[in-house]
Image 1 (cartoon, rainbow, N blue to C red):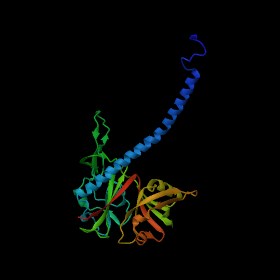
Image 2: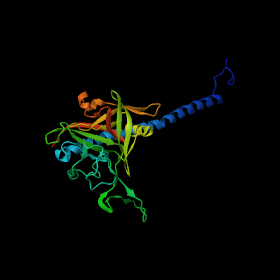
Image 3: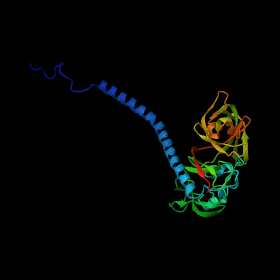
Image 4: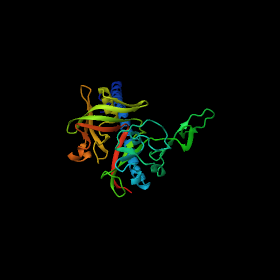
Length: 321
């Protein structure tokens, strides 16, 4: 027997309005959930991009140092100190010899164990662009035409002829003899530090040892236009922990006795307690065995140098030319 086409027992030919509303609600919840993770995903992508570029900068930096003769004993002003050069690390030694410098600022003599590289450095690498991974030219606003105007490096009021470029991912290096004396044929450590962008801030931090690798920040010395300022307040220590000593970052441990050389130390973690005291846990194995660590500890005090925008530090064992 054939049924009537509009009989209630026949299958439905469509969906109800209620079902459409329920489906739309589910879709809205899904899209909202997806949108909520986009900022975090974008942040992680940007971080991954910087890390990738930092790896490339570190590899390029090592190649540049070897190819341009920067792993050499004649770079040392003093054979018993480490020498630093390049972006970022130029902030920790006074009066770096560099007529091509793009900017003038006060330097902090963070330690007599770290000195500027010899002037021969400028004969082997371009101080304006040689320490940067990218070369984006900087332009000045034009008042006469719509054509961009190149910005040039200036010394005083005179342009030196080099076009000014933004650093982006940049690097600096520290060369330290393993034996304590930098002579040709000696073994040394080349430390390449890669920064997210050109560094404007550097700080010397005094740490008080609590137990093992745990330290508390007791004072922070930073450089201002009027000179070096030491701030022992808890607020300054908390700010320094976030800016200069984040977890998984690096700092330079300053030796208190010779013939030890400055060494990079990894910050395993850092935090602030309920009393607003800032603490850090350091990987002291980077300083050597227990006997070697005493060259950096003045009783229970350790002095370190921290940097902002530091991404990674690669260390290579080299032989000085």
